[in-house]
Length: 112
Image (cartoon, rainbow, N blue to C red; front, side, top):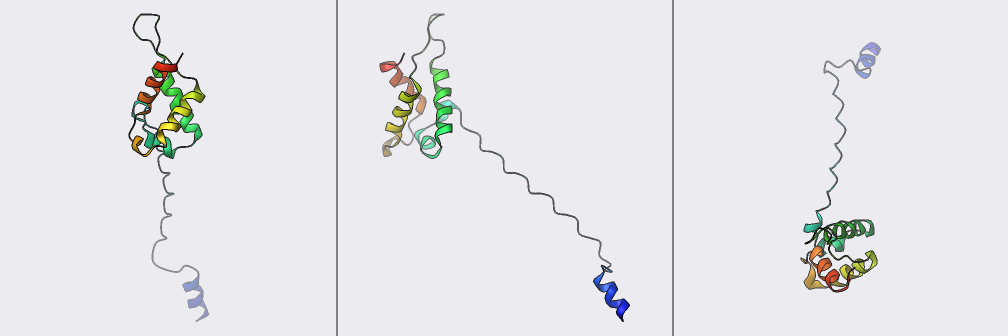
């Protein structure tokens, strides 16, 4: 009888051992939208590092070549762009405003 208990407790089962469960896959990182697609809704939910990246991407786009071979678009200093976006994006009516449009319009009036 002692042998039977030992076999039952020592893995004497006729079932094959269960395979180890695969490790759960990591969730893919959400990719930041392209600068042309970023709206105030995105600005409201992301942190400062993401906001600064958005400003830099829009500045790069807006300050690119325009018109004559030596012409470039007007740009804003980073702190100014941040204030413009913060000022508009906190307004309830601005949820769907595109940031690049706010940027280029502000730069046209006070950019370099």
